[in-house]
Amino acid sequence: MPHLLELVGDPTVGVDAIAAHLDALDPVARAAETTTLDRAHQRLLYDKAAHAPAIGLAHFVGEAPPEREVIHDGMNTLPLPSPFRRFQKRFCRVAGDAARLFGYNEGVSRRAIGPGYFVAVPTAGRPAWVARGPVVIDYYQVPDGPVPAGWPRVVENSHGLQRFVYHRTRDFMRRVSRHVSVGAAYKGERPLDHYFVLCRRD
Image (cartoon, rainbow, N blue to C red; front, top):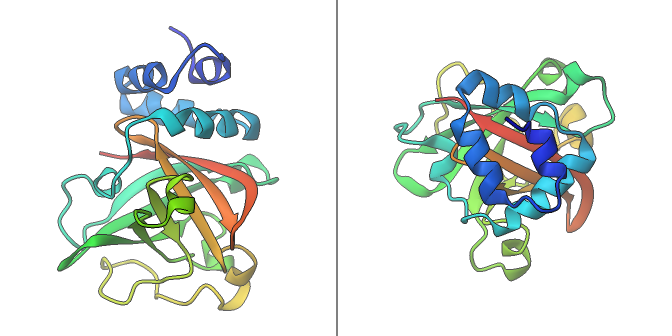
């Protein structure tokens, strides 16, 4: 069986074949393969994912009720040692508001840098944003309502060291498979050429 790295790097392989490969893996193998992609391969995957079915908010939370945490394991392309490039994005539905999700970033640097809270919303109605992905993880916004018990205190991303990582940042998301998505980071309207892959836990 080919590996995800090989499929992404093969110019003849499209996102449908990549999705079929990932969907056929067990959860442990699926999550493991998504951590093997370097920046060049994540960039390729993001480009290929432009041809995937549009991702929606439900991809990130499944059938979970409001305020129920759903974890996505992630690997980013920042120039850091591998343990610092692994992280989680944790999402939840918003009670009484189906048009957005709340979430934050969990990882080894969270206590030092901050939680990096965000609000995820569709990009519909913003043509330039739609071209980047159907859902945006927006760090300009932070939750203004209840979040799951056990999540850290909600703070603005201009607070403390977070301003160097999350402030004025947006991540644009594309679907790869039933569990996997890929995002591209922007600072304001400027692409950073940094990407990350997320794999949802069931």
